[in-house]
Each structure stands twice: as C-alpha cells, then as structure tokens.
Length: 201
Image 1 (cartoon, one colour):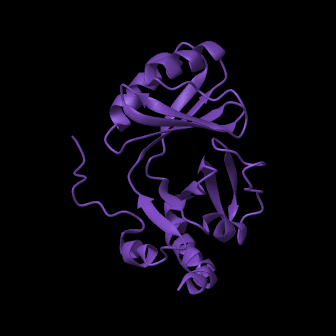
Image 2 (cartoon, helix red, strand yellow; image 1 turned 60 degrees about the vertical axis):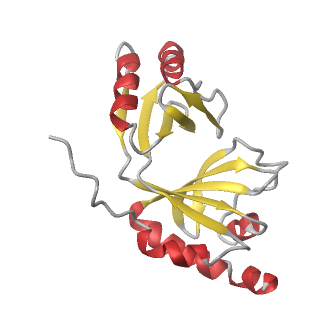
C-alpha cells in the first residue's frame, strides 16, 4: 500500500511568508520532502558501485560532498563520517534510489536506511547569508577555509545541523535540520537577520 503524500505538510510551511520577508538581506527557502538515505559502508568497491549507480561518485575527502545529475536526477552525496554518508535526491526518488543503493551495498558489510522524514532542508543565500550564520555557528565559513563542496555536522544556534557550502563565492549554503527543530531555527534566522534587514532598508 502506497502512502498518500498529497496532504503532507512540510515542517516550515507556516513560515514560508516570514522567511521570504528576510530578503534581500537573506534568502531562506525550504526545500521539503527531499529523499535522504543514510549509507553505512566502508568497502571501496561497494562505494564505487553505488557511485556508478547514482551517477555521482561518493566523496573521498572528509567534510565534503559531491553532486551531479544521473539516472535519478540531481543527487548529492555528503560525507558524514569515516563510513557514513547521506545521499540526497529529489522528493519522488526515494524508492528507486534506495533500491539501487541496496543492490550494490549488499555484497559488503553495510546498510542503507531511509531517513527522509528526519530532516528538512533550507537553502540560504544573499549578501548577508554568511554573516547571519556566523551569529550561531563556530565554523569558519570564509571561502578560503570553507570552499564550495564543504560539508560539516555542527551546531547552529545550538541546533544540530548539517551545513553545506553550495557556492562559496556567491554565499549560498544549505542547512539540513531535524524537523522537530525547524521552526526554532526559522525563528532564530528571523531574529539574527534583523540588523541586516534594517541596514538595507
């Protein structure tokens, strides 16, 4: 039996207009219902096969992510730990991507777990995106320290998040936050952005 997804509500649906009001200092847009699959595997062969199946190689360096377009559309693979990765794809790709990964990880010791409902995703950009993040995050986000492709698990305003540097030169970031903390984070972003909105008004 297939679940009815037509009536689902994203964690930040009620915040859409308020987040839009942060522009032009900060553009904050929720990207809900993305496919998110946690992969545990350390066998290089399995990682290579999964990358081939996705059309996106698994990242070889710690604290980085890879992205590309393959048979499942746009896909990102985030390095979370020595043998832990997060595969992120479009909202309607969960079953097909999960099946493809499971088919390749099975010969080795590993696991593929659907964690799509655990987090929502917020894309941040704008002239003060880095400034706002600096209010609540200890990670140095200067392009020289965190170039495009950087991916870290950290705290943002005391909320555990996964932070991606989508484009360091244009100050574009992606924040993956637990659904239960999403409204808290949205409220914090609104508050942290006040001084920059005033400066641009």
